[in-house]
Image (cartoon, rainbow, N blue to C red; front, side):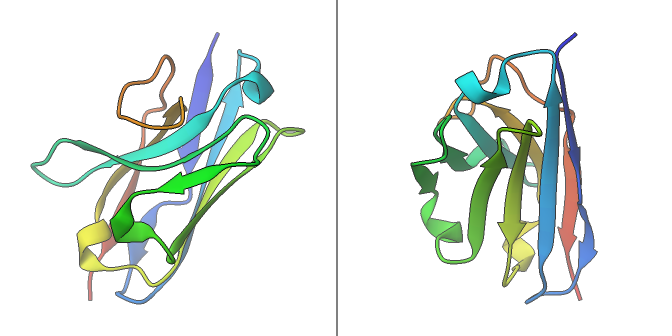
Length: 118
């Protein structure tokens, strides 16, 4: 059974940090490019960041460049998103999924809520 389980979300003040994790199982993690997408309240899915299967290439949407860092651990089949200098506009549900860009994925998790508020 394919499973992608996100964790690490929560409530944080503007300027704060969170580290999201996505633990994967049931598929060959190290053969897939991976990404994070998010959905703001009342909005559609937005691609946030992606990483190549070997970790050599990373990509970010312009609004998070310099603040977010995507990484992966192919030994433990885990994807990460370090989020610093968080802004209220970063509020939403964050999902991990397969593929490096766009919002479609062959596999996607159930999401973790990130709320940035004072």
